[in-house]
Length: 184
Image 1 (tube, rainbow, N blue to C red):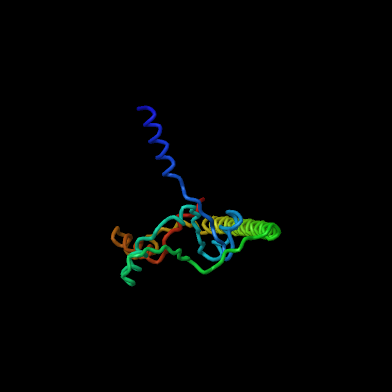
Image 2: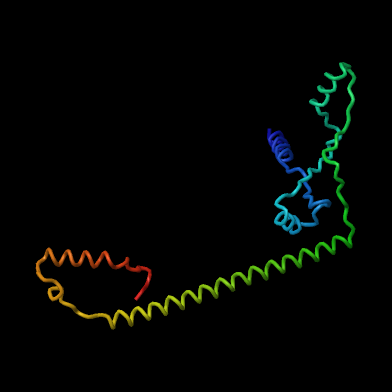
């Protein structure tokens, strides 16, 4: 019983294994993942070729049925259909070294671009902070100099609660909304 369980588990693990695949970058097999990622960033597409050793032994039943309907013969012939007409280059060692050097250069350039963008964003945020600080400082000085206690009754003819409330509502409509993002 124990051996049967182990044997079943073994077959289950083997059946769940991933098939071997190769990424194709244009007309050749990608050297490594970096080249595949770079090719995908540039072209937004990448081909995946599945390497299967048992592919020669498989029979396509749909092809067989179609051939039987056309010929009305009962003979079975197995032909292999090519998926694509494109041939895949096999790169030499020198070409692989050159491609790897190009990839390293592209990665280095991309890193420099990212650093430059971060530096620019940091400088822009610094400038914005300075502007906010300056605007806050100006507003503080304006607010201090403009603070004057004015008696509303001096402005109005009749000094009752209704007239005062109307006056304050009109003044509130003339002013904009306060900027609550500024800190004192």
